[in-house]
Image 1 (tube, rainbow, N blue to C red):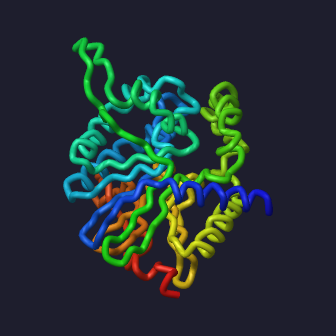
Image 2 (cartoon, rainbow, N blue to C red):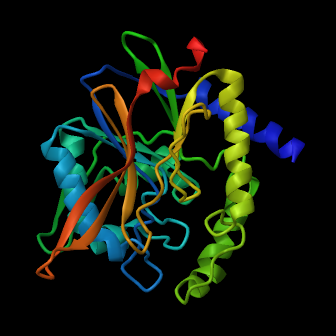
Length: 304
């Protein structure tokens, strides 16, 4: 545990030092989603059931002027080796994301399941543009995009910082040993996943692993006086009063909907989008605030 803690803290510090800096103020608006795990619309594609909810939410945030921050594992590139098939399966999602990108309102981070986005050649070959077989022409997708391992959101006035990472940093099987884990997922666990089995190296169904990650990240926060927003565990978390500012935006693959973190007006909130029936039995997609809003400044550990 001690060695694992030291490794995770070292990796988080490296990510922080090499992070892209995004300046914001109290007029800035961000929506953080992670762990979409977009697949090929096969039985193992957990995102498919929530695609319409996700699309509805993205349209809401686009119209309201938010910047979309995808906090890793947006595309399931462990189970699926060909991004083209993922893009075709979820074409409407990428069309919506392109609207954010064209408005300079898309920030993309990579996680362990799409860690190949750290290689520029892979991004250029798959994300800059694609070939439209029907019209027989190349179409721009996200030309020139740079996915990041980490982004530090820094307040223009107070200089308060928020480190945003996927959350796999220091999780050995999903970080330093990711290639081995990817192969076991792609050629073994992928097929068991489609009938309900989960890879034991994944933190998603292990409370012990989730709590260990949360403890390690909280230790880094306490030492460095910097709040964190991450994903990876799929367990949404919004700190209670006097708790360390560890935030987790949940995931977009739960059976009942998607969770995310909003920043707007200098406040931060944990939200959820899901399908609700009205008294007449009609189904509607609705947004619900689970925790918050709370002023971001109240999580500034430099004041304590």
